Length: 182
Picture 1 (tube, rainbow, N blue to C red):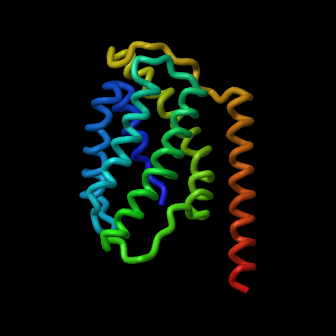
Picture 2 (picture 1 turned 180 degrees about the horizontal axis):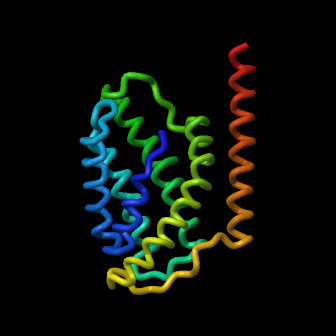
């Protein structure tokens, strides 16, 4: 499942900061579930969205937007929210008996999925914030000038390298699953 809620969270946090970003994350999670419900609603998952918005606020609020800053923000959110906080909450949900299937904290497929999504979400976020920040500056909602959001060679090579690693990881995972089922 691929979602674009991080785009709304990033802009809200860029404009209003990390503390209001917590509220943006809470609203985003609640409205997202009400509009597109999937499974049983487990309230503590709201902290994943709140944390991601808070982290975006730490990186973007009153800061000069750079591609490196945007990539690092996405990496921080991916590692903390997607690879650490979400599995911990899923483990808790399982312990309470809400999530019926057994769940291990470290799931290889989850790590691979996040590695695969990271470069694409980073590029989308670079172009999104690059375009939206020009508007927010004109509206005097943000003040710091950012750099032109065309990928630099260094950032492009990094994202291409991560994409190659993701493709390799998916290939190795498929090979692993194929051999373990035989």
